[in-house]
Image (cartoon, rainbow, N blue to C red):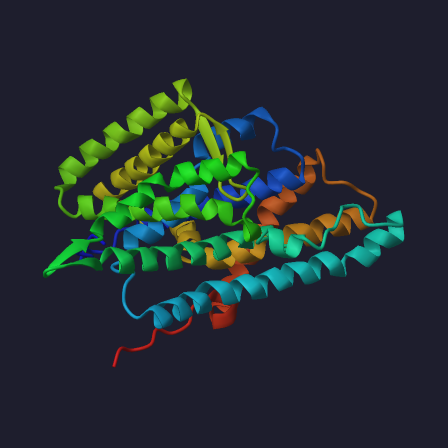
Length: 357
């Protein structure tokens, strides 16, 4: 894998981008629950921000100094930091969801949504906290990139002292988006929502390569290139549009447009903010720095509020008052939860790093 020199002063660009992505994600879920997700103001917002979930994979690849080392230790560490919160917060969401069902049944006489046992193995979402699919796919992408690097560092003996290097293997990742699209055309047959992980691996690798390139460019050149990439994205996103929903591995429009436009946006926007030394914007950057708490905790709150309203005989659909309440209360509760959740490693994934012997 490409070596990176990570020794640079802290830049707040990625905290800002991460915070914006989390805010957009919470807004997306609130608009969905309140039935405003098909209105023009939101469809326009989505039109220009469809790539935001891809950013988290891109960011992970950008900041990874190395994904090599001992395989067992690496996989164990990622499992602790990602799979434990995945299971715990998935269970929290499930408890909220099914804990409210007796009140719903008491009013309507039955479940108001279809339930299925195959949900357990077909998708990586949980009833009551569906966004945690991301943690499972994130873990899978990390592990896959680890073994791709392991393989690319090896060679095949050909005899006579000759060897065939396998460094080219890592570049096969560039074809993974087409594999992901092919799985989409087959109606995403992989269990646990893993049809999307190939796109995650691609964006991870893209972030890794982008960091390698920026480490070799002057800030002025970085800014110039990034502005050009962003401008090209703005034009292409209008004349050659394509959208990608990573959660469901759902492709809309020309798949090549999705791949190119998303790559342009991720590299262009991050490059601009990195090159201008983005200042710290308190609220947004705070959300970005503590994104795990906002990510895992916001959805069960919305689900709880929804079922309370339904149990009282009131739907959220089309209700602007409920939209505003959720838009204020949910982020505020997440802010309040941050210090408490981050003290508990199995809730936040913030396990202390083991010192190398």
